[in-house]
Image 1 (cartoon, one colour):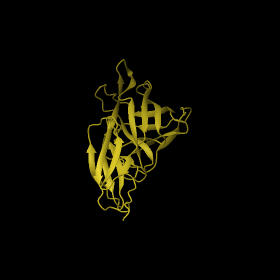
Image 2 (tube, one colour):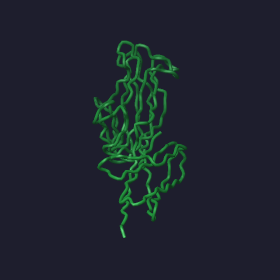
Image 3 (cartoon, one colour):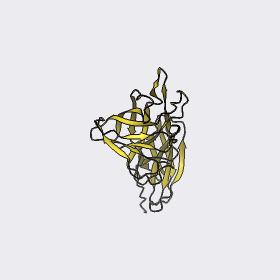
Image 4 (cartoon, one colour):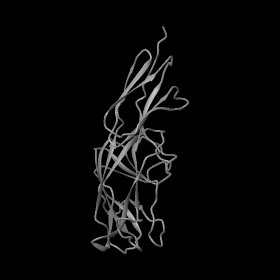
Length: 255
């Protein structure tokens, strides 16, 4: 009797189809002489395994961290444009899981531009920053494809402020963004005479694809099922195994 070996690859990753949010920097509605930031205060960072794709802006992204894209912009909609200001975003503080770190990546890079450990607070000359504007004559624009990562699962509370290099406006009030580094869902596998049963729980507001590969050396993954509803409910899928000797499964999450 031929033995059918059916190992399960427990793997989830963030794909290049991820969306990204914008945080606007413009004039403070209550004080035009001050900068102000308007935008989301929460970001979800998903696990990216080493060697797996993350974003088209990062062809050399090494993986091995929880990642998300977030764009700061002086192209305003909710706020008035801060004409003449040259905006940069300064990191003020980082809190989160003990021993963790928070990092910023410029588009296209293969290593972080800067990293700071949890528990860190800006002091003296230690004030890592991000330039926002594209046009140094007007201060207008934004740069896409930048990313933030954490190296441990958990909730990180990160505080920023906007500063004017041209000294036309005073620094903005502090803005705190919560980054939740979320580990992949667990997959469960059982093998019958003709089918493999894969079970897992989808996560709220995330879509996912279930993929299979018979030979990891070829790295040829085939999507065998997709769930687009983003509901946090239990799912199961039965995949015919026939006379296959082995197969590897992975769940690809995205939004």
